[in-house]
Image 1: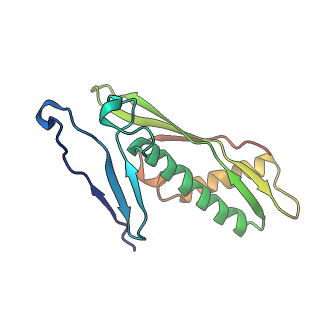
Image 2: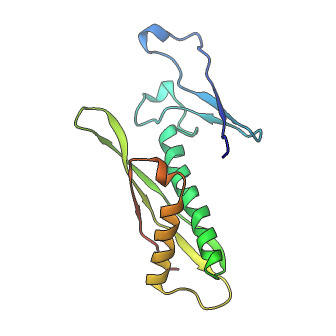
Image 3: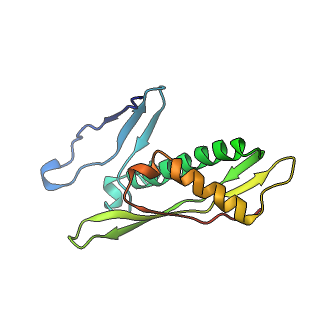
Length: 155
C-alpha cells in the first residue's frame, strides 16, 4: 500500500506556556512541499492564542472527508459513463460532546452539487446511488467514526 506524511511544527514563543498563555499557531508541511499555517479553532481557544485565518484541525478533517468523497464520486461517475464538468460542496462538521465529556466531530454533512457534461445526466435516484457507492469506497469515510450525511443538491 502507500504511506502519507505530514510534518507538523510548533515552537514556543515568549508567552507563558506553563500558564496556558501560548500561541497554538503552527505549520503543516506535506510531502509535495506545500506548507500551510494551522492553528486551534477560534471557537475552542481564545482569539489571542490562535489565528482565525489559519486552517484548524476540525476544518481539515471536514475538508478531508469532503475531498475524498468528491474524488471517489468522480471515479464512480466516470466508470458509470457520466461526464462531470464541475463539483461543488459546502461541507459542515458538527462538534459535539460525548457522554464522557470529551468533544468530537460527531457529524459531517456533505451537500455536493454536480454539473453534468454532455449526454444524459443521471436522474436524482441514480445520482444518489452514485454518491452512496462513492461513500462506500472513500478511504477517509472508511477510517472515521463520525456520521457522514450526503445530501446531493440538484443543479
